[in-house]
Length: 276
Length: 315
Image (cartoon, rainbow over the protein chains, first blue to last red):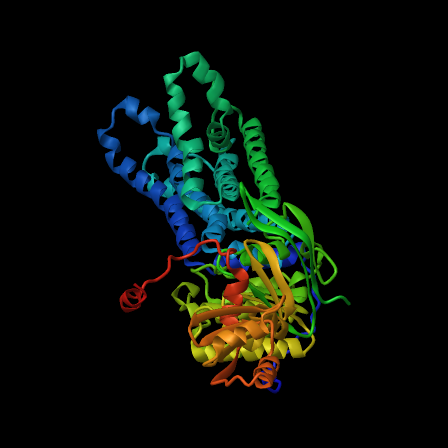
C-alpha cells in the first residue's frame, strides 16, 4: 500500500464538449453503419424492393399469352412495381427493432445511457438516423423497381403506365415513405419491448396477424374496422386507387403517422422512467 | 470544483426485495476507495444508482456535486466500468469507443490514444464479441478513461484479468488517485482491496457495515487475540480473567486470550512466576476480517465443506 507512485501515465485530454443532439446523431450513425446486421438487413431490403418487381414482371410478361382476359384485367402494373415493398418491409421492420433491442441484449444500452444520461436524445437520434437511412435507400429502390418492371413489361401495351400518370409518382414515393414509417414504428416497438424476439413478434402481430383475423368478424364490422388499422392506413399511402372500405392516401398517411407518433410517445415515456 | 461521490440514505427495492438499504457514504478524491461486499450485496446496484441507470426508491446520490443526469458532459465527469458487459458484441472496439466519444465531440485521436494505452491495438478492428474476458475489461477501462474524467467508478475491474493485467490495473488505479481523482472500485475480494485501496466502504445485504481506512478495518475486525501456551494454563486463566477479557481454551495447556496485549499477559505471568512456552499475537488475515464482518450478511452461503479425514478426527 505504500509502494512508490507507479509509472503509468494516463494521456490527458482537455476537451469539455457537452452532449448535443447533433453529436448524439453522429454517434448513432456510427453505431448503425458499424454493424454487420445493419448492412445485411438493408442490402436484403434493397434487393427485395428492386428484385421482386423485376421477377414478377418477367413472369407476367412470359405468361401473358396463357392468361385469361379476366386474369389479365386483374394485373396492374403499379402492383407489380411495388410488390417488393410488401416483402422489404419485413427486413426494414426487423432491423428497426434490432437497432434498439440489440443494445439491450448486449448491454450496450448501459454504455449509451452513461454517455447520454438524459436518454431521450439517444431515442430521437436513433429514430432520425434510421428514418433518413431507410428513406434514402428505399426511394431509389422503388423508383428503379418502377422503371425496371415497366421496361420488362414493354411488349404489353396495356401494362404500360406513365410515371406522370395521376397518382403514380405519389404511389411510388409513398412506397418509400411507407417503408420508412414502418421502420420507425418497429424501432418504437423495440424500445417499448426491449427484447428482439418480443419486439418482432409484437410488430408481426400488429401488421400480419390481426388484419386477417378480422375476416372472421361479420363483413360489415370488418369493413368498418379494417381501414383504421395501422396496416391498412399505411398501405393506402402507396395504393393508386382506394375503394369504399379503405382510406384515401392523405388521411391514410396522417393516420399512420399518428399511430407511429403514439408508439414513439409511449416508447419515450418508458425509456425515461424505466431502470436499465 | 467538488470531486466526490455522496450518497444519502440511498435505498433501492426490486419488487419485494431490498437491494440497497439506507446507504450513506462519501467517496473522497485523491485516494482509492474500495467498495467491498460479498456477491449479491448490492455493489453493482449502488454503481447503477450513482450513474442514474436505475432510479433510487428513496434517498439520493450526487457525483461531483450534481445528480449524474444533470451533468452537461457526463463522460468528462465520471468514467465508468460496469460489471456486466456493456458493449455490442457485433461492433469493433474502435467503433464502440468512437460512437461513445462522438456524443461529447471527443476526437478520433483520443480514441486511438486509449486503445494504445490499454493494449488493444492489435484487435481494435475485431468484433468485441470475440474478445476474451480480459480484453473486454481492457476495453471497459478505455471506455471509462475516454473523457479524462475527474471521478472513476469501476465495478470489479480485475475480473478475468491475468496476473499481469491485475498488476497493471492496480498501478493504474493508484496513478489515477495520485492525480487527485476520485477512484471508487468495487470488489468481492478483500485481498485485492488490501493491495490497492486506501479506504474501504463495506456493505452486506445492501447495508453499510464499515466506512474506514484499510488499516483501521483490519484492526477493528481482528481485535487483539493472544495465544498462550503454558504448563500452568489454568492458573494463568484465573489471573487474567476480568470484565473485558475473554479466555477460550481448546487444549489443556493452550489459551486464547482476548482483550489483553502480549505485554500485559507476559508481565502478569512473570509477576506470578508462571512459565510461558508460547506467547503469540493473533492477527486475523484481511480475508478473515472481512468474513467476520460480513457474516450473516451473506445472501447465498455454501454449506460447510467436510473434508473426510477431518470429519473422522472430529468424531
